[in-house]
Every structure is written in structure tokens, then in C-alpha cells.
Length: 120
Image (cartoon, rainbow, N blue to C red; front, side, top):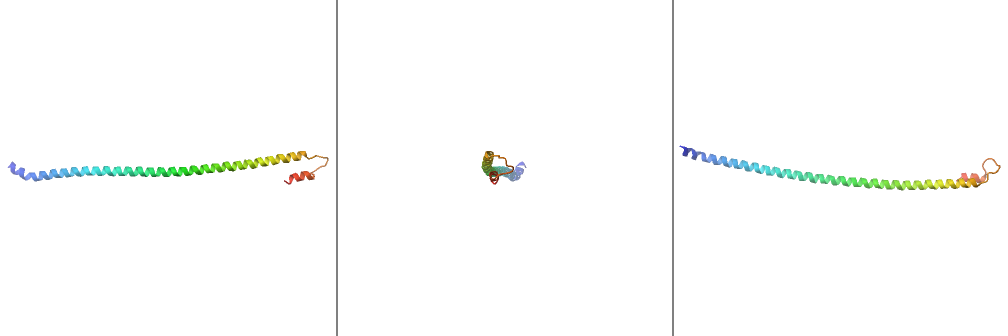
């Protein structure tokens, strides 16, 4: 009787073993596919991050160039303004010297030479 039971159960045991082996292979394949997906996601994330880091660096470099250009322009304008101030101060000093060199005289008011100094 056990031999008959063993003969009848053998196909079920083999089918069960094949099913278990198939399930094991499916789980193994799923873990491998999952690992491949995770690796692809990590690579894509790293690539995206490096792209945006490069974009930010380019934007920062452009902004720094603009800041440097503005600083150079400000220095140029400041130098020009200082030159104009020095020229105006020099002209004022010259006019004061010319005014001091004119005779004061007994006359009240402005004489012709002093008026010419004012016209400048």
C-alpha cells in the first residue's frame, strides 16, 4: 500500500519541487532585476546631479564675471570723477591765485578784471 501511495504521490512531489524551484528562481530573478533598477536609478540620479552642479557652476561663473565687470566699470567711473574733481579744484585754485593777484584799489565793487574771473 505504501508503494501505491508513493507511486501516486511522486508526480505531486516532483511538481511541488519544480514549483518551489521555479518560485525560488523567480524570486532570485526579481531581486536581480530590482538591483539593476536600483543601480540604474542611482546612476541617473548621479548624472542628473552632476548636470545641475555644472549648470550652477556656469551660472555662478557668469554672475561673477558680471560682478567683476561692474566693479571695473565702477572703478573707471570713480577714476574719471576723481580726475574731474581734481581738475575743478585746480581751476578753482588758479582763479583764487588770479583774484589774489589783482590789485584791491580804493574802488568799491567789482572791477572789469574781477568780473572776467567770474565769467569762467
